[in-house]
Length: 132
Image (cartoon, rainbow, N blue to C red):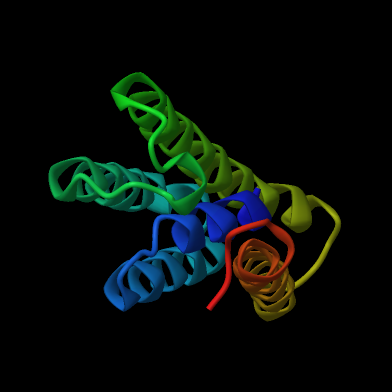
């Protein structure tokens, strides 16, 4: 999930505030778990609304039309919610494996951070027409 979210943020040329906020929200989710779902969902909705208001077009959808753009925003919202729920309930699953609080946080934060970064690199390196 985090790879997809990293790719979408990169493809939409998200502002550094969106990247920083997403990172902070995922760290908070990794630390707190399911109790942070409301904050994380609020962040996801805010980022998707900001994309809709700014009318930002992802690089891979240029010239595709409004229907495809709206579908990509819906997909962004769904993927964001999937990341939130996966990360929130992974914390609960890790508690059942008998990991302590710090270990669970470090594992979840590392996996999510690497996934976001890999998604960004994947978008900028491997897709035709993408890149810096």
